[in-house]
Length: 430
Image (cartoon, rainbow, N blue to C red; front, side):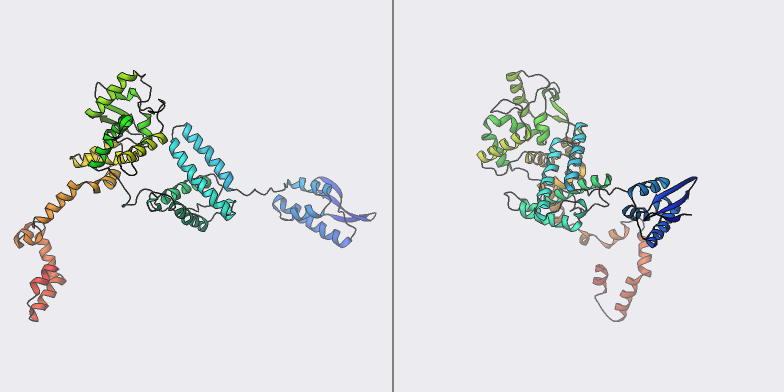
């Protein structure tokens, strides 16, 4: 029990807290105010450190008095967490990408694509004057998608801005990291389908005439052309092939792909084999040296330069947008047209059967011609007799019994009873 006493002009409290006796100034001359403070102090001491009155008492009591009282219950002033910002998340995610890249779990090309989307999102947030993660809502992200589509369509070869699905997937990954790090309560990004899942924007194989023109105009890029044409490697794998992966004795190239980490063993086409043997004899390289060099400088060819040189080759040959991945599409369609199975092509490319079937099968004329021949024979259900249809199934008797007892039988009986002659035709339709 605390008592209020006046010492001079200032009131103070006296009493015992546990086994300790205290005399502490209340810092007020008003007796009524002093008794109100004493009541609040007793309540705060009884409720402990979780009492909400401690913050109020800290604002009105003298500092020494408050510190002594708060020490009895172990009250500590709570610190407000600072607002998490997009800049903080970007820095943290950049560190995460660096760690995954060092562990060989993330490719440099993938991290660069992530950075591209994050730079675009940073520009968008700056235009909207948004910096805190709390303010990045679902509506803000949906506005970014519209903003991104408009910017993409201003560029040449925009292809309908279908890459916005990839941008959404990347942002979803970034905010999933923030959610895992407890920086946000929920992910504000809604996916826009699977990236690359648009059926009208799939493979872009070259035609035979385009390949012939590019071979004629290849010049010093002939080895690049032949390697892409006869291996179907992605650009990242094409520039990274070393001579130790080229087995001349077996006439095979053996490599673990960078993107999917799958082992592919490719037979070397005779035309490519001749070019590789000539290049090996000219350079006499070490096993760990890269196969493809920049013809202009003699340095190992990098992926951006590979992309630029294939585009330049296409321009010389009059072939538009001849990027390296089109050679991969071409080889896949080429193998399917020659009779290779979907599984064989998937193993050759280091892809899944599902991806191979979805992206490349629609471009194979032989498959469509086979279906066309079946449809044009005229040997459909109409040409089959009732006897064949009846005995085509081992459970046909059970089916007939169910039909006889079902609504179809009742409809036909009613039609015959009413004198309709179209019963058989209606039955055939049913």
